[in-house]
Length: 353
Image (cartoon, rainbow, N blue to C red; front, side, top):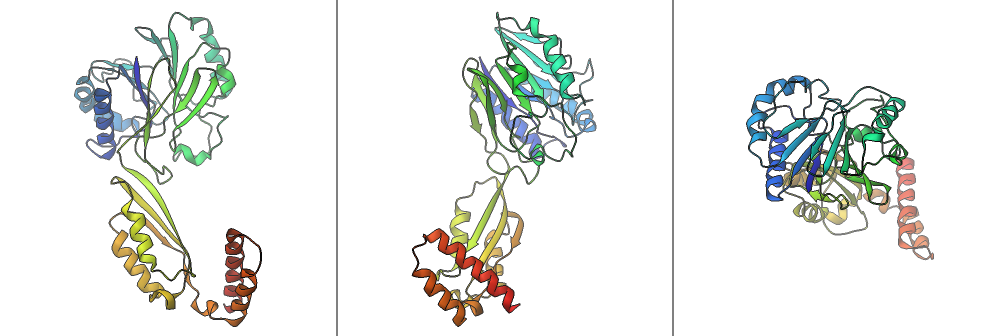
């Protein structure tokens, strides 16, 4: 039995990039011969998006040979009223005590609610006796794992409220083999509940905010085996930080070209240019350097920040030259020498300003 697990597409419009990502996931499902696609919350960005898009989804979801299971998230909590039709082979898990049973699987879902961890724990223990061993039990969940070490910003633009929080310990005495989760956007993460039992965030399959950095992934696995990340060719953000070294006589433009030759075709770049230059060495002042960099990167960047400085006058200062001579004669490693020289540059910059 093969499952593709994703979440947090936040679809807004028909045939936009997020819609096309959903279509791409359905194509992957067919190519990989999956049995079930689960979307663990926030398929839609808002409930009114679901109202507009549901008629379009019916045909899109009905064209597949595998089951599609949808779980309400905090963004689309009202999108799955009883009786709503999303297409053949599509199942909505909006009643926690009514699992979907399919061959040797029993799939439970906790629809999102604004409840605390004590209520979540009560819900889990209410079904404890129903988690029998005759089938593999899978729980779909959309919320916040308190054991995880990440910034709250990594959920997306969710504010400071708590989102149906749980702890791994809540599942220790429950016969649940996989907790397939949603709500956490930034990166693919797996936690072991214990041997051969897993809690998984797949990350968003398309970058929703600039915080979702790097190639996107989904969880594509065979039941009975560990979850496994599957990389996607979908739009995403990449951050490139260029640290310019004033002691290098090579043109920084070549560094920019090399870095941008390697980027993914679907990547949108957030560029940060830092450090220092010696305009005499490279034959370019600050303005000319920025102009040449922009000619290379403008079409690939969504954000550019230039924080570098020309320190030609500092490098020509006799006091600074003496400092460098003494530093070079020490036994410090190269990394330590670099840190000390940068501190000296900052000090000299402050004095000259």
